[in-house]
Length: 171
Image (cartoon, rainbow, N blue to C red; front, top):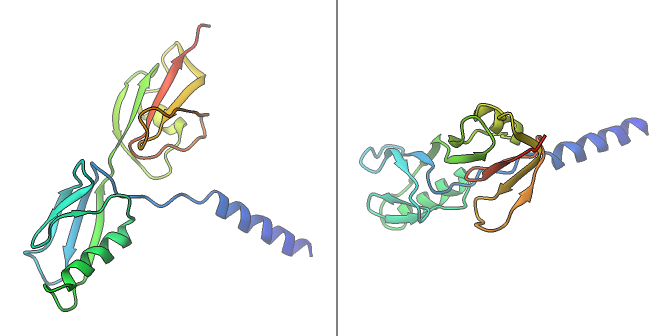
């Protein structure tokens, strides 16, 4: 019985801390390969501000807020509709979009997102806290919000496009 309870605890814990799937968004650099069709393949294409890519034959295709597998299915479906008999599409992320660190860090700016990014890692990437940097006054502005702010701690996750602001300590 103890073994079953322990296993259940592990499964719940693992699932509750699982990383959220990465959603394609503006600024991501992708490789889109259509097997056997070099003229339709895009070795490097950046997702535009409208969350679209310009694709041969199809024009502007909206791919924002989709995971890689869904982008592959969408493009294959569009190519299947009158262009190719059995399209096989592979999408790879070559470069993630930026996240931003502002405030009391040594090197504020935009940095390429990495999977598993936390506030602690973002501050390290930005050169660490300045002398006045406060570990208790940090806020995140999520990518999809211009006004919403969230108080965060060092182990809080950050997403692509998020803005982290490190406040000032007075002591």
